[in-house]
Length: 269
View 1 (tube, rainbow, N blue to C red):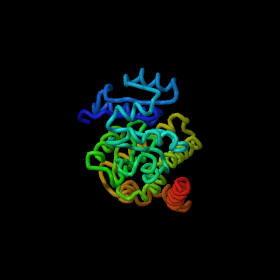
View 2 (cartoon, one colour; view 1 turned 180 degrees about the vertical axis):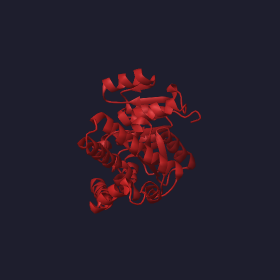
View 3 (cartoon, one colour; view 1 turned 90 degrees about the vertical axis):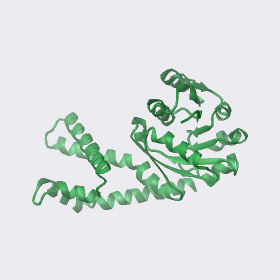
View 4 (tube, rainbow, N blue to C red; view 1 turned 120 degrees about the vertical axis):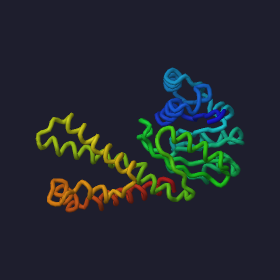
């Protein structure tokens, strides 16, 4: 990322994943990263694991970096962010706090501050995440590019302009891994019920879902088309699909996305 220094206010799991991804991709050197955390144990772990500079001072991070990621929990975020308002001038500030809207961040930091909301998901911890970015009107092209490059280091990243979409994003990609884990567990347990060893069943389920997702991503084909490719008339796949249709699996998953979206709106209101 040129000569930009990147700061992290909060050095928890997501911040560490971003640090690991940036260093692994060669986007920055360890000397270009500074992170703060209230926990001495976390500071020690991150410093030893990645060779980056750590501090207890959030202000020091804001003053030291051109791009700062706010990687703290939404609860009590104002008490952490508001004191950084003066130091945030001229910085690109990125927040990964779910439910904390751009207007609130601007109120804490200043109306003229370049702020980007980011909604990553937990697969970012293994560099396979999906992050949606939403910049405020104060952001320039360089601010959006910086945010995109940071989150592209831990998976895929896409930029949207309508902040209200982030609730649906939360319901889909933010919460989606949870839905997939339920599906994985059910697939594996179905095979265990039929006599397969649990370790083998789990391995088969994981790689089936992983491979199906990769096939959809790399071919760009509609999921329905890919489904039809594997569902031969009168075959085993079609018999299984008929059970899923009778159980309204599609409707249930759609309802789950809608429920999570509603809850996201409630939490941010």
